[in-house]
Image (cartoon, rainbow, N blue to C red; front, side, top):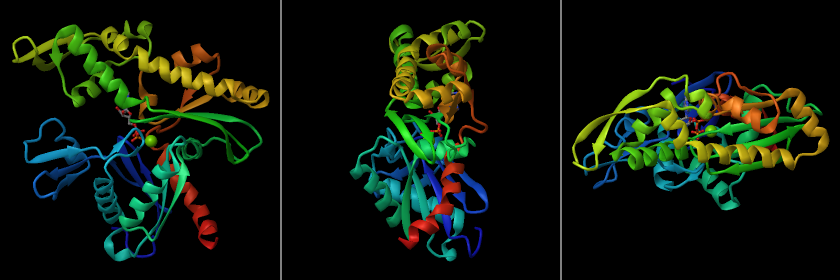
Amino acid sequence: MFGFGTKNIGIDLGTANTNVYVDGKQIVLREPSVVAKNTKTGEIVSVGTEARDMIGRTPASIAAIRPMKDGVIADYDTTVAMLKYYINKTIGKSAGKPYVMVCVPSGITAVEKRAVIDATRVAGARDAYVIEEPFAAAIGAGLPIMDPTGSMVVDIGGGTTDVATISLGGIVSSRSVRVAGDKLNDAISTYIRKHYNLLIGERTAEKLKWDIGSASLEGAKDIESVTIRGRYLLTGLPKSVEISAEDVAHAIEEPIQEIISTVKETLEETSPEISADVIDHGIVLTGGGALLKNLPQVISDATKVPVSIAKDPLDCVAIGTGESLKSIDVMKKK
Ligand code: ADP
Ligand code: MG
């Protein structure tokens, strides 16, 4: 609890993680976007890390729900419950209702945006405003967004990859595809089932991606194999299997290519002046997906533009959303 007086908060409501920024206090909460519910009563069992650790391990009476999918609200009531829990946890019930800035992917529909605003209000906001995710990411990455020079940011989260060029405080061109961390996990599970007859859970697939995932096959050669466990389909029994980094690189080749194509297409739509700026300053990667090994190199090879990873890529959107709280006062007067 942070007492009275803290009324503005910024929420990065991500498909994988929810991060909350309290005005003047930086990020105060980082939790997975997961809620565990009792399937009979609808009662909430746990929220965040505790709920995430239950994924794939719940008895019939409990469901571990990820209420956000592909960057948008898939389960409205659960999203409201999660937001309510996080708002209370960060500012406390006694502090009065906060004004909340929430980020949304750039490609979503007006209806999807409306749902985010409504959910945030129902969850306890005095009022809610939205900021486009790539814009928030660019602020959080420290890009010179207000300058008359073009910047390009690629935010790779759990559900969506958002690509945008920004100049003079506005988005010049942007694209959002529903291919990001979750699709990489799915691709890994599918590959291992096909090639090893082994069924693995979402969390195991994600861990493989974090530990030995590589965006390039070449780069995978230098990464050691790991042993994983799952259910062997031919016997139905548990089995250990050694998985190489090349396996994982092959598995994720297609979604990685889709991400690269999206970056290229956005560049192709960009004006010559901004393209020139992007060549000078490079492309900046944000979001958890930016941490995939060898990703900057493969994007750079495909676009012939230098690529770097922002400092604390998982925090950029929340920091940018929080920074933009300053403009809430301007919006409130309208
Ligand atoms: P969102 O904004 O959609 O909630 P985040 O920006 O929080 O997403 O990033 C979460 C995604 O980043 C997940 O898919 C997660 O697996 C992925 N991720 C986190 N760390 C790594 C890593 N070291 N390597 C590859 N992917 C990662
Ligand atoms: Mg995000």
